[in-house]
Image (cartoon, rainbow, N blue to C red; front, side, top):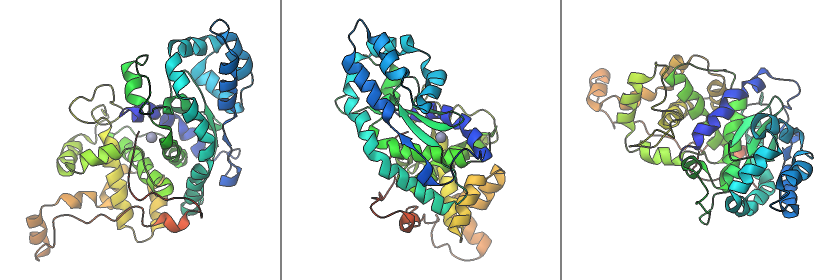
Length: 360
Ligand SMILES: [Zn+2]
């Protein structure tokens, strides 16, 4: 489950298409469609199918009735009915176990829309592609097409009762609970806004991911990496010292998208460092709306790090005393609760969670 960040990379890497302010992508969150009709079609097909005709029924009742988003997802991730039927057949128990989770998604629309409204309030230039919730073949938790965010909801069916005997090691790691979906959509909608297409460095790529986590929490109440913060906050200085030595490298596989290889500590700690840098930038800024804009539109990652003041957190007490000529009042800058600011921006009825929690 810790490696979900790794597969969401694929969504991240392709969202830059939206950053071009495509006029077809709504700038009004009211206009963004959150489409779950494909989920209903999938289960109707499953109810009609027998083991002998699964491929044919999935094709006729699910794929051939595809929403525009599922049409894109078929091209990008599913392929054809044969591919889908073969994965469903090999994971019968798992697919049967996720029906309830996938059917909960339509009730999450208000939470997802609330995050969109919060983002719009913080960042008026925000754009909102339609979001399609589809069921795929256990290969992708999300991706984007030119017109939409596409969420593979079968990857979000984990519950305490999930049967695991059909699952390979990767699936055992990445499958996540459906309750995290609004936070995942929030993370992805931040990527949609980010104007930078790509950074070659560990620093840049970590800031891109960590900013998406930081702002996802700001607009939805949570981000998806609480486990990294639980781990990292106990070791922040040593992680920073280690990260700093590598942050200008293009090699990122000790810090990002390393769910398959991380052994002695959590994967994807670059998300954590990037989030802390974005948080520091935000906390330091007098104008919080401008800070959100700066975080979304960052281009010069080294300057952003300097401006964030993040590193000053690790200046030893005696160094500070020497520099300032006064006794230090404490060794670390107190961190503001990142949830302080946006509460008032969230529409009535939206339950705003108090602190970080997580999954991807
Ligand atoms: Zn991401």
